[in-house]
Image (cartoon, rainbow, N blue to C red):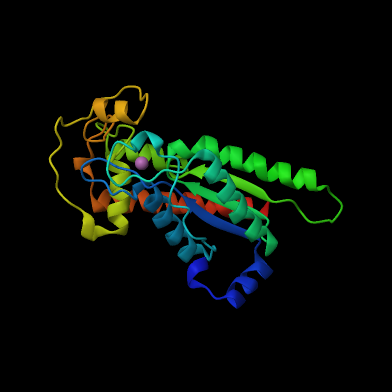
Length: 248
Ligand code: NI
């Protein structure tokens, strides 16, 4: 069940039985020679929508631009300052709590967002505390989960891609996007086959060290079939965790 494909009476009816919503959050940034700019937003979106359809979970719009400053050396990347993300997440959360939601489960697709998302939660909780108690309204609670950390997913990715998983533009994440959009699957030769690894100092330094955008990965191994397996495991994991969070 998707918020954007629902009518307001349908959302009101959902709220009568559940106060929890699932929001995919990600980034719009380069993902190497064969990965989509939207990879980090599409992965949690594909997983969330399938989980929503299977388990009747309400899935909000995808927060699809994140903190991607270090990818700005590559065309198409869009980045938000951490302060902008925090302000926007606060407004999303406040809008939802205004309607009666009490639990927001954020399924994240971008490691670079984690610190900012955690800071946004602290801002939200400060707002609740500073506003004072006494109205008997249960406070908002948030949950952050990175999709690759859902139960069973990391082990599955390692078994599918024992060599060349790497840390950016990975065959696993590219496969997940191809499971959602098989028409974009492509065959692109990687040179070198496995990308280098190392630190990142700034956007220009990133492009110098990792000229095609990959870090430690060989995403030419990506496939729709592998993506379907990863999505199936992630959907199972997110449904179980969302339901226990919603009931908490
Ligand atoms: Ni990524």
